[in-house]
Length: 519
Image (cartoon, rainbow, N blue to C red; front, top):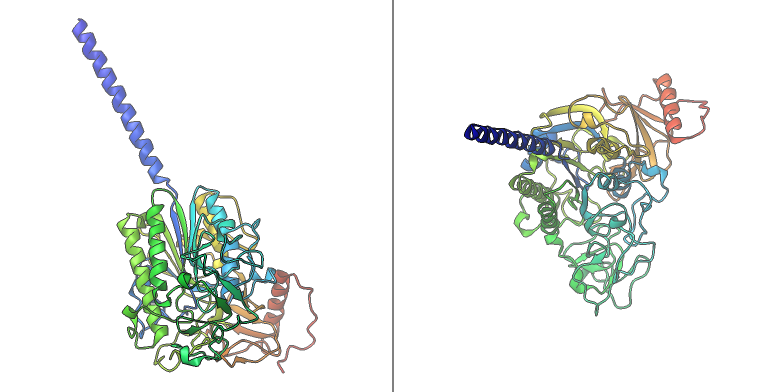
């Protein structure tokens, strides 16, 4: 009898242990299923709508970007908020239209931090939900308070607006200071060779692109004729910091390595990485491995280099087992430009390639080519492959990603279109303000309104149509994607409707239009 009781107790204990084990396993599985996804934004610099294969390029081969596009959701109506870099970066990180901030324009390398440290930002939203946050690559949103000492800790900066980790260049590749900055400190700086930077006056005895052309390996076309670094003339003047200066041809590899390291260092917990490529912004300096790879000169070569970097980065995610739990968003800060300050054969060797695709304009322009850019979302096993004609904007990423991670925070102008980004909905933005160098336009439905702006029709330096008209211009993108048929005169009712919508968003007083005829 005692033996029977003993065996019964053993059976009860075994069942209890089994149930507890099953419950623990179920709880563990449930926890793994609800682990928040990693979020990565890959942000190209001056990459055009027609620069990649998935969007129609045939002369350039971009297999890795095409893989994301063909395996994820490719948006044909995806927008940056601005046709220039600083405003677009401001909008994507703050969820606020750049025209609301009078200082949100192309910044010099010595500009103070554009984002207020108390302002809501995308990395802050994700940090509030337990994410580690990092930025690698181009910053160009200002640093410090307006008088930076590059030889000490530089603050405020990315780490003060929500990023736990930052490895950046201060502004752009064509501006001084030409150094990397990690978490507020210039890397590899020799204290005996301090850095000085000035955007108004050169330092005595320092050579410049204008006065010392014999020292140049890349000739300047316009605007880029100040301090010479690595044989390339820059915007602005710099002295010192020799050991800290970057090697331009190694920049893509450097940023790739830092992005890969960030991923491997934070793979155990949810992370957000803003991987800001420098390509194909000028000066275009491909690593020797890619020189001649496109047949289009340096611009084509650095696009192929950027595509390779993206492919290597994706391999890292795959090898770490992260692709199935990572949302990847790939886009560009604005449209393309060929000659943007240097003689680099971008125009001469273009051949049949059209960086604009079917669009008009380009960087600096209010036409579609200024702000309509490649826009791809990829999440292996979660986003069904396809194309979407939904109108989406980078400004909505803040609020949409907030919903993804369970945050109630929202940006000032940012709206939730998460399901559209994930391919679960076709709901699109009905109204969107677009900007180019402080000038603004409105997209509403299939229509584009461009208000009258004084100034030249074409930027003579970069040979791009700016979208300046003497009176209102109105285009129907459904029938005229190239924006050649101005309907302002022939469709006065739609023009009035668009003007009213534009003024409402911009907070302008309604204007009485006495004549709708274009002069």
